[in-house]
Image 1: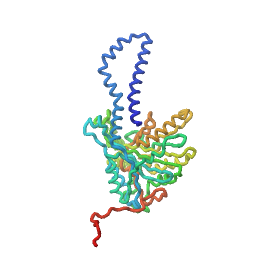
Image 2: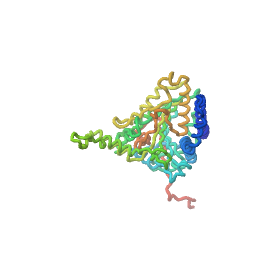
Image 3: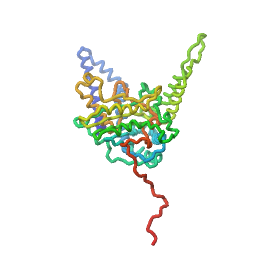
Image 4: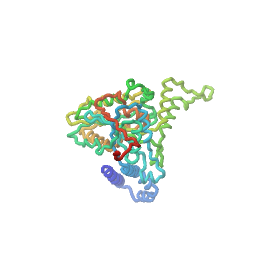
Length: 448
């Protein structure tokens, strides 16, 4: 319902503001005593040239948004709860395989599928949730395009796992009421300044040596700090972590973009060339070109190798949202710092770090939000966006919390099924492993 209202509002307000602006301009000109008839004649005479382009740029984004929302609605959404098996003998590479298999960019076959059907990549949401200390794993996914494939891959990679569809979304429990609930939300992302910097990977399970399958008691579980914090929540507290992943695809006119944007493979090549000095040639004293490539240190070589490994895998556009929700009057600020520090496990000096890039709060409340209404509006919107599995920048001006591009290797490090080295009390596991009956099991009445 909110999407319909937004579409109607946009369709009405944009032409209205344009009309008011033109009316004001003509009013100002008429006050100066200028004859408007020649100006109006020129505007009307040239309208077949400028009017179509103006209307196109005004309505293009709104149209693409509306057909995209229709495509999302037709696919539906399902919330799957994942119950952990008793034993997990696989590394996060298993989850990397799952994310690779469900990577579906929904490439349109023609322009009609793009501009009429709204065909585009759909968002997958990986969620870690604590409801009063009860830690749960969820994945919210498109029903038609991904659900069946996702379930099949989870069962294939993690024997003994239990995947059930929630009839009622857990997030529906919290209905916005500033007198009943207090919340704070963060956008946690790579601290990369430009899109080209997204190619630098965080510390992944390969850097931890988990790809070498060490013994269970020797494993270092990168998710352990986050899970421990989630398990420490009190009965009246909720901690929700949402990793929104949209398959990264090339942006062209055929995919619904008016401007081309470099893929991260090109960004990786650009960064590697910059580090190796391939494009930095200087003139010698004699006037001849000399190659002045820098000598790389061992650390720089490792960084280049990690970039090449990272960009050789499937990628998603990622936005991470972390929310702390509690009943009014029971807000505990000490719960916030551990929630944010848990992502410090994935920091790698010289490569990439994860950290909060935006929050539903202000540094100077008196100057930035004197009435307190902006903060209330942001919190309400964040809650609704969480439920809708929708990500948008909180900082519309600087876009410091824009989506970052991350590989399946990075995502699998942050979100995977942990092994038995994690003994957090709130992390429950399937008590009994269920198996299907043998195919040749005799059935029918027993012989007498």
